[in-house]
Length: 106
Image (cartoon, rainbow, N blue to C red; front, side, top):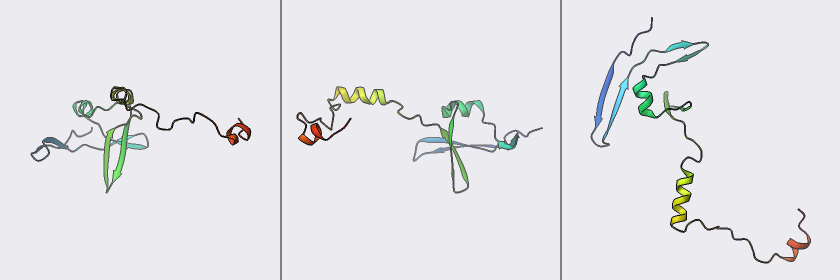
């Protein structure tokens, strides 16, 4: 039988204005691998989906919500359009050079 979380510490960081939960969890065997159970409330608070990012740094495991490439780009582009910042930076030359017309092969 697995042990439940051994302890839960709640700390309020006044300088940063956030709450940090520190808890201990038992490592469980999952096939040939190891794992931990994440309480539902913690899982939901972190906004985890089907994937997470894992980072190992100085003997610590950091688990964060998976970054989705191009997330919120549609909103960023709409904001750029509202401010007139959506013009092409690399304008196409109006007249091609002789080399472009004679030498370039498509």
